[in-house]
Amino acid sequence: MFTAFDNFPALLIWLPLIGGLLSFLLKKEGMARIVSMASSLLSVVVVVASMIYAKPEHALLNQVSYAWLHGLGSSFSFLLDELTKTLCLLTAIVFPIVLLVVKKNQYKNEHIFFGLLMLTQCGLMGVFMAADALVFYFFWELALIPVYFLSSIWGGEKRIKATFKFFIYTFIGSLLLLIGILYMYLQTEDQSFSIVSFYRLQLTAQQQFGLFFLFFSAFAIKMPIVPFHTWQPEAYEQAPTPVTMVLSGVMVKMGVFGVIRWLLPLFPLAVKEFNGPIILLISVGMIYASLIAIKQDSLKRLIAYSSIAHIGLMAAGVFALKDIAMQGVILQMFNHGINIVALWVVADMIEKQTGVCKISELGGIATKAPVLSVFFVVAAMANIALPLTNAFVGEFMIFNGLFNYNPWIAALAGISIILSAIYTLNMIKNVLYGSTNSVTEGFTDASTTQIIVFSILVSFILTIGIYPEPLLNVIKTASSIPLFPFK
Image (cartoon, rainbow, N blue to C red):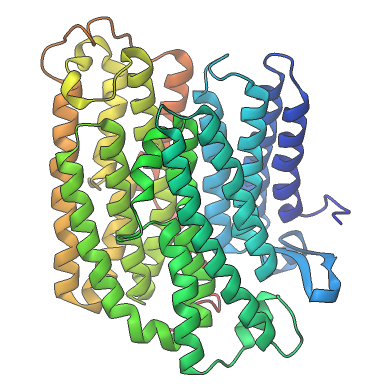
């Protein structure tokens, strides 16, 4: 099936796949970690190389198609364009950070743990690069299945309930997506799952309306946006923190990406018909999630509801159908991944040392861990889109597009930014400042490995916040490709 390693998309599939399969076999202590880290770091190199070799004369390096189910009109087709590269870069960066966060002997049967993580990376890369609808669905499932096992085996005390809810939601969404894909396949003239064949379809308004809700439901569950969100807080809280980082940092982007790559170009009539009510629903949902975040005493649940609000803003930006908002969404998908992972790293460090995750039981950590506190504050300021942080650039562009779409909608969505400042600043105050107690008295500062992780994340936060031009140049090219029929 796969016959060569002479192009970037094939390498981004093969590296984590081989790394994951080898990890399953390497039971000797530390070996699975080394193999997983090596394959993840090599993925970073491959994505960066694809950005360097991005000119038209290098097209063959950035696309590939292998024979697969020829009789069904499906092939393993992958494409690394500017939209895909941004998310592949995020995926490639997040996984080495996740691996660094895992402590030695933290999880029983760690070779299986690392192997499942690598299969998840393989699935995510396939989702973002797929140029065939059946392949897209295959990797959509491949990304989800390892996460289910990671959460159900190594999760918290209530992991069974949380993972079952996660499974039910994602299974229903996947089923709806598969029904939509099969229906469109039957409408193609050449009986092909190729994304090009799907783009060429001339669907009636009635067909578009029905298919729109099949695809949108699957993507809305994955983001998730209110009211499809109820699986997320429990899953984030009960999953092992490294898995939560993958879920919130990368996996939720599958939904936003699906809307951009598949929903907008395939069903333009339906998008124009329903984008107004959807944006209104999303904006109300952002406020709802932010208000719940304010009331949270669990650090993990606060971060989870914060993520719902920020993903909601990206979804609203997509449906505004404005170039500036679309560019902001693509940029913000990358930024949000960096910022939310930084917050989870801090939450993980606090929980490991104190054994608690309740904000009311913490306090005074700044006096015991000044280095950690500085990094925490930087990540928190990025979370509320403070100027000179990466999130400011992306959210400013999204709000610009929302304002051009409808000033009142922009104002409504903007309330969530104010609420974000409230719960984020309260979190900083209650966790870092005040007096220490019996829980935090023995707290120690960040280790060398943790400082390396924080330094990588903060460098992205500040560099993109101060000088976003290189990444914006890639994104501007992405929004000019024929995926956006709403010029």
